[in-house]
Image (tube, rainbow, N blue to C red; front, side, top):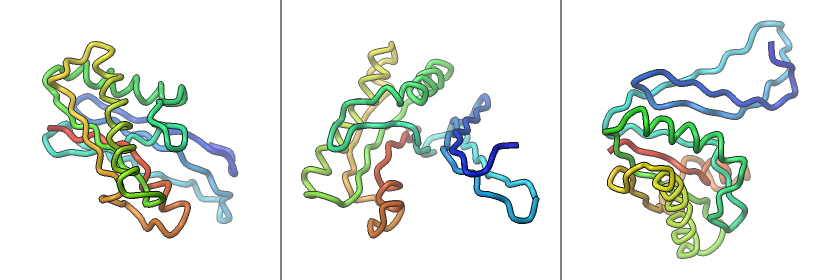
Length: 158
């Protein structure tokens, strides 16, 4: 049983599905019941999208941080195990800063993930990248938690 008040990472995968990863905190249980976490796995079909929750960049930078390596390696293994799969890497930002700067940053970040994949042997015809800037928020930009959710990298099966 995970200890309360700690941060954990969960990774799940199954053949024929996109992988799932998430960081989460375990709150102290007041009723003694086990805690559960939904782990949705999406089939590898056209149009399916997953958020890569463990891709990290420095603020205002498109340089991938070493902490991203585990998630990038999972994505690379997924692509190699499914040699006909094509993806779009989508970059997203929060709404802090100028729209044009956020658009450019999202394009560069998506491109960095695509470049990682092609640098490790994935054919360039299988990977495209697109920056969406701040145009597709998942949450309100009114809180730090919402802005953090909006700063993300996604892959969409083509």
